[in-house]
Image 1: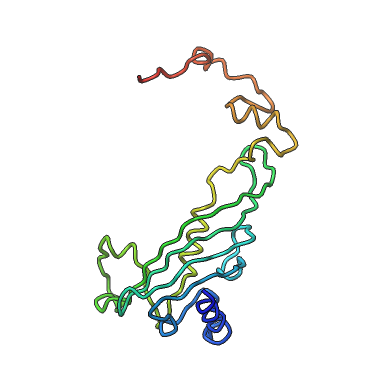
Image 2: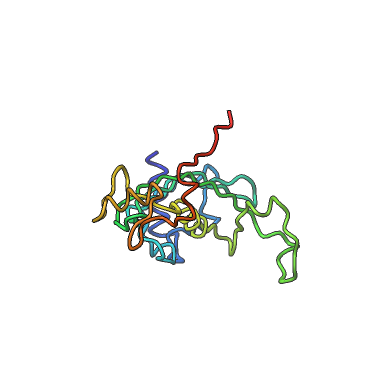
Length: 195
């Protein structure tokens, strides 16, 4: 373990001459793999469209062939989200597995001509300029970890918990909160149990 950690420290201090924390030169990935444990900032991902903190990437880069590398690991951190009901901000921890497979760009798609992608091409990232770059896969995984409609955990943290309760139960709120009389006949309707 100490040997792998020392190798990572050496890599970070000397090997990453491109200045990108998530780029690993292919020649510097040993045959027995490279352990990765990085604390990240949103700026390391070349975009800051999300509010996150405590980002951590752990895992291992391994050569699976002469022109192939895989990364297996975990991405964790905390988002600062806004509740979709009451608009209160709250921290949202996440921990997501991350698996990425890299291969060299095939010779038949090296040109700018149109090429038909096969199903297996969708799951592969490409090694460019003799470098394995985890930036895009990490950024994509963070985007997938953000819930579509975030809600306050356990109870409403906003200034109007009763409004949040009503919204959560599908009741009307605000001016003219009475329901439209045309919906009256459906007020007590519930779907039948299929069993």
